[in-house]
Length: 551
Image (tube, rainbow, N blue to C red; front, top):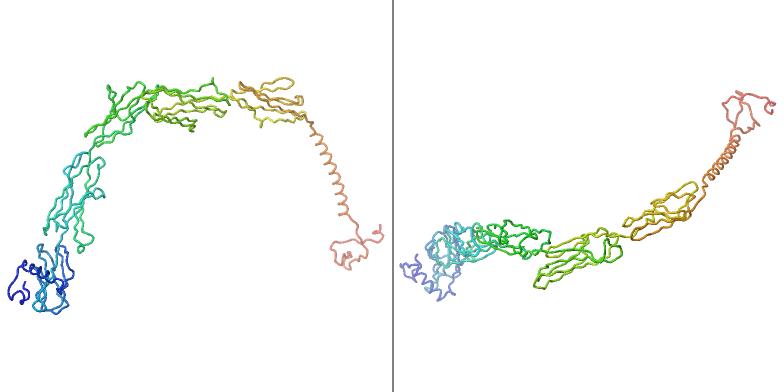
């Protein structure tokens, strides 16, 4: 377009490059003095959207305008002019600039930076190797279609929610381009099933949309194959002679590995293997899949193992001290062990020790006990960790008898003619023999019938092989006064009844048959009845002569 004629020439049209050169020189010469303001000072426009920018001045001028390949504004005397484009679709648009002619043939311009952007049509992630093998390198590919401008594009790589890589571009192409970005990875077993995604982000500065436009691919799940790893399998397994133990060989791998056991001669498939005293000393567990195999050796130690009580001939006697002794043969060398003694389910004592010898040794472990009668039949268990060796023994405890004094009192009253049965119950092991002793002899049984002929003192004796205990019972003979008391009570009741009847008869005669006073009685004028208390008596009365009354 053509600017003012007095500075650039009356009819010459300048190329865009020439105009930019003039603009640059003018800015260098006096940019700080150019009386133009444009708002906004730069624009970021989505492809196809409208744009408008104002250019204004506060000085008197000879004309101002917008120079642009799209939407230019001719020379105007106004103090505010607007550069406007309804649809900005020119990817190669040169930066428009606002210019002004003022003073004595002075001219200056202010350029407007314009950025046109377009978000991608699609963002996708792929790999040539969906199934990967641990330890190898692979590439993930991100395809971005139709994005502009490329120099503002950032590609973010995510593994799960973690940002693992970023890629930026220096391509200054303004029109949309396609981009292919590759990410090298070295997957391991922990990445099996991991999800990767790529994200195209346009960072268009402060003038651009906020937050930055982002387009994300669908997640890509990767499969990682890796060779097996055997875990939780001890290097030494001990088994007590005469017993068996099952060991389990577990392995982690992808694809799922197959497990086999070998003793050098025979091979058995499966995770579980039963070890007995006839098993070979050296075993090998092998886990195999398509990627590779892993093996682990197991040394089998046959334990000769016994537990016993010493310093006594069975059974144990309550109140004495005894030793429970456990002898373990072929304790593995250079191993830290823990010895646990249990009584039932209760831990009694625990001891830690380390076999520092270079070869298996024999060890003896002792537990001191003081058994009580309630320990009869108790189970003691010896346990050796981590060899998983255990052995149990049940003890027998004998104890002296104890007579139940609640059932058998020390004093027993006996009424003549009324016998009493006494019971002597005793607890003891072996079961005690019960006998009754008195001056007339001995009776062997748990009960005794006491009568008036029984001696005053009797003794219950409970006897077993441990000891004998006695309980003395004093028999007190008492007369039976019950009939006499009953007779006295009957006589007393009869006497009281007679007195009561006599008193009642007297009261009855007095209350029901007492005398009446007829003094001053007046016969009724109407019927000859006697008036009582000034009132008429409705009961007819017969007239009597005075002589009859006194009679």
